[in-house]
Amino acid sequence: MTVFLCCACGTSYEAETAPRRCRVCEDERQYVPASGQAWTTRDALAQSHRNSWQQIEPGLLAIQTVPAFAINQRALLLQTPSGNILWDSIGLLDEATWRLVSALGGLSAIAISHPHYYTTMQDWASAFDAPIYLHAADEAWICRPSDHIRLWDEDALALSDRVTLVHAGGHFAGGTVLHWTADDGAGVLLAGDIVQVTPGADRVSFMWSYPNMIPLSAPEVTDVAERLSAWPIERIYGAFSGQNVRSGGQEIISRSAKAYVDRITGRPATDPAQAPADP
Ligand SMILES: [Zn+2]
Ligand SMILES: [Zn+2]
Image 1 (spheres, helix red, strand yellow):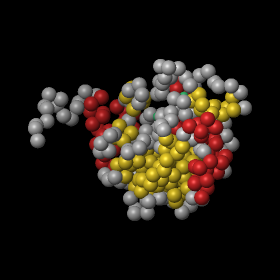
Image 2 (image 1 turned 90 degrees about the vertical axis):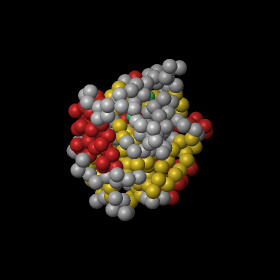
Image 3 (image 1 turned 90 degrees about the horizontal axis):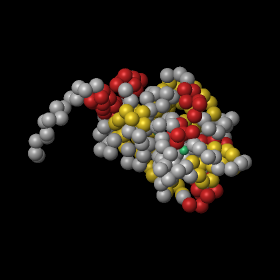
Image 4 (image 1 turned 180 degrees about the vertical axis):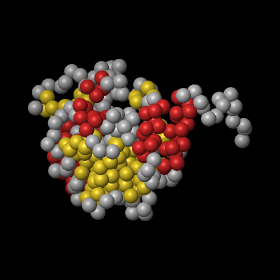
């Protein structure tokens, strides 16, 4: 059996020959490329790509594959006194990455926001003998079994006294974010694309399908914001490079959710006929 990775979404499948279809890509929240479905293997990916590292803030490292592969999200390595947590996964786990993560103490847990980032989580889990925490509502999207998978279905699941997984829903039924109380006492949200940080890093958004630009409904967006409202959130780190909200996270989430709901229900807060005045 060979592990094949979908080149469009990074999901891994175990099979004798390359699969004909990718279930994750055929869902309307992803897409089958116009050029057709393409596949690679773990070895081929390790030959053509490598991982880059960046410190986002003390105790938080981003790992991202270069050149870009599949959805091109970053994985975040959260270093805590009770062990390292891998937040979201990327397809490429090469020898260098294994050595570096091992040298940092390995992984005590893997937690993933939603199925678009499941990728090769099974390989990361077996390489570091770490449990993978997935929300049970998305169980049907697990395309490769693993003894390391731990399904949870509460509103929140504490991984340690300062790290909690929060069920936010929205983009996927089991959409999960990670809340971390950092060393400076501030609340930090690792958001995946459950809460999507926008290019200005001063707003967030919430979508059913990002590539196909299909929004969530007003009640769904309100529900996501309400599920997060009890958590102190200062900083937000999204799934993609540069998606770093450095302050005021909770206020940004509630303001962005309100603006979204106002717009989608035909009550935009700003009259579109009123062009901004020249500076
Ligand atoms: Zn795919
Ligand atoms: Zn997604």
